Length: 199
Image 1 (cartoon, rainbow, N blue to C red):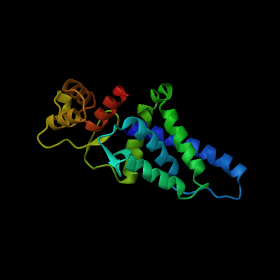
Image 2 (image 1 turned 135 degrees about the vertical axis):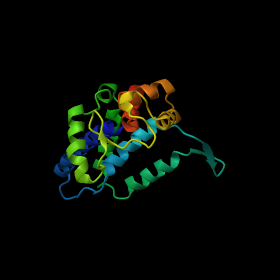
Image 3 (image 1 turned 45 degrees about the vertical axis):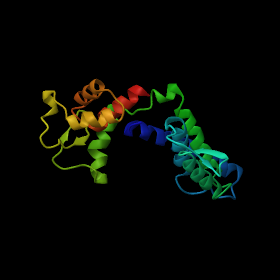
Image 4 (image 1 turned 135 degrees about the horizontal axis):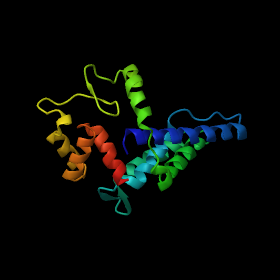
């Protein structure tokens, strides 16, 4: 999904969560809604349901067919049942946001402008302590430290290790190298581009 798209996904979830909480407080003002990241958890669960393949199947007591994904669903059911009806607005907001993110018209526009990303990485990341001093800047403003022994990406070379990392994620060598060159050997931005292209 990439960090920029995930931020959009989280904001979409927060929007629906806030809207449903307002309706919930109007309908049931005496019942306080459950606190916690319920909406984001259930929005991620929707994404998990559609995007993550099952890796293995097994039977419980020889009758019930389950998969490795069943454990995530069981935890979600436990979370949903932990404080009803207080958790229902958050659960509904998460499911709605997760399903809306699946709509191609929304998903294709699920990204922030380059200027906003650059401004946030320049001014917000240092406040959070995630920036590194002395790191060179990429075009979109992300900090990066060039691995030892890797030539400057401006010269057109990219880290073989980064290419292998992207190939292990299922992208072709040509696409991986092109994305890394475009993003000055920044493997995170290259991954976002490749994930955005395949979405």
